[in-house]
Image (tube, rainbow, N blue to C red; front, top):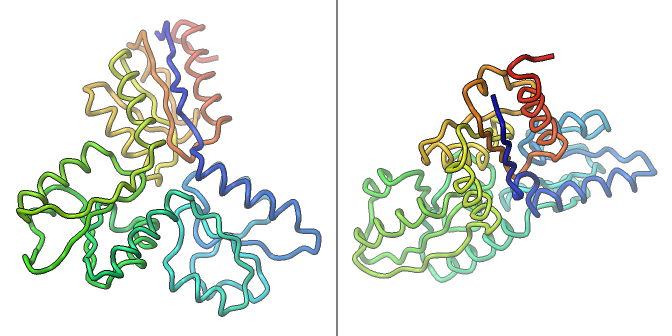
Length: 293
């Protein structure tokens, strides 16, 4: 039974997610002429948020071909590839760019280094939408690195200039391991762009600190959210059970029955009300001594 609940102060929306949703809210508030509003893919990776906007009439489309001329398209926080944005313009859509400023900065840094002939090595998830956008600002021969094993398998050429960047929500300690391994393989220094968001680092540091004080850690966020999955892994690496849930509905008392101290953190796209509900549910379990009411 939980006697103590420790909630991370960094849990919930990061700056980029908050800005993206504020932009979408402004578009909705100013839509007096009933303009069709859509997002290309999910604006953020959280099912509750997406459901709320769908109920307000925001349509999620999965391809440029689905966008009707004259529609307002809100570019999601992860950003989109450069050619996709040009396609949207060619279709006559009004574009509201809600790309996270940190992602936008990473895009510009990658474009700058690629313009001088260097080849990008990008540490990230190959199928993630942010990674697709970042790659569009690099040369065609850029390569994505998902883990240390992939570093060892890279076909590197001594005469080629390389530079390294990371998806903004990656784990910084794992990124440093990639840097060290690449230095061994290349035998020379190469530019390493600082593209990992400070908010991600602070969230992970606090989660690790709390994990060392509790018996179980609840990590709240969408199952499709890459930064939430990494947060759960960072906690698990501390040797503490980590339970990734999307909402309080996913939590059962059995998971907390043997825990006297429970920690709660959440991914960057998790709304405060969802975290509040999880904390309330965990507290109720404690109050009723192991019985749900």
